[in-house]
Image (cartoon, rainbow, N blue to C red; front, side):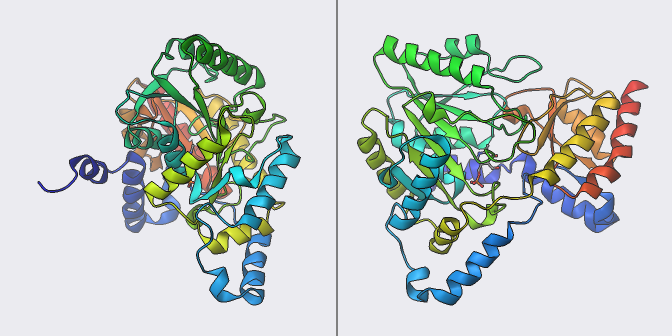
Length: 399
Ligand code: PLP
């Protein structure tokens, strides 16, 4: 067969989330959308802040159309990068330079580029991820020529198990991906966890005489509910690349806009940045969407209504735990990670489906026996779904 079989396999095997999404549409057509409780997709349910539409209108009305829709520099418009760099410096106390920022089409592109920039194909490079993890990491790591290595979390809290993490690092480890707030657990890694993790990285880098890169995947940074802070990893470990996206923080997932920030204190920061530029070029990810680069620069202070997600989280968490479900209370993102009421999460998903509840079995996220509930939906859907969650729990209690 004259085409790439690996790519065929990827395209041919739909992710479980997409599969559920398709089922949901079909079921909604059969019984009505209000009777299907679809909690499968991580698509933001709160609108983008009004500043975004205002900025779009303003830019369309005032800017030269040819320039506005034209190519920018491959790494992104210099003024946009300057504005973002100033914001990072102000917010996190890192002296960020616009010349270490690369505009991207969202976190997926940020991750693919960063991994491609540091992994050396054919050298046996490994990348450690912490379970539960965003399923696409496997695709991005393998596509960059690396091998995924999974570190299991501590039981119940889903923080990093430092001893397990340490045991997963060896002379082949090239990078580690940290995602906090986490998809799918909603957990925010504590400062204590981050300090311990970075201490391991420092020690192991010395032991093996090589740099191990820390890749911070941060699309959910602003979506936090409790009085918790999300440590900015550059302040804890210099060899850090931050992969940021506005998909969730400004509810703009379809606009494909984000960036990579290379820590100014990184060893050979300028060379790594050039490797990022080269990886962006080789993957065809040059010049992130021009209009949205400008929109972002005009909306750096804008925020989505995080309270709406918190309201959903509170109702869902309080109700489900009262019905007997076991789950870690999420401090961020918009996911609840719930222990399935039987060992096999897929069978539990099938049982939930009979109650029109669509949740995602999490085996592909690296943890078996759990499902993910994406509560980025209307409050009404959460409320209306509660009797079905109660009935499902009761069904298992009677077994
Ligand atoms: N990383 C994580 C943990 C995610 O949950 C997602 C999307 O859901 C992404 C990366 C990709 O984000 P983007 O839409 O900005 O490419």
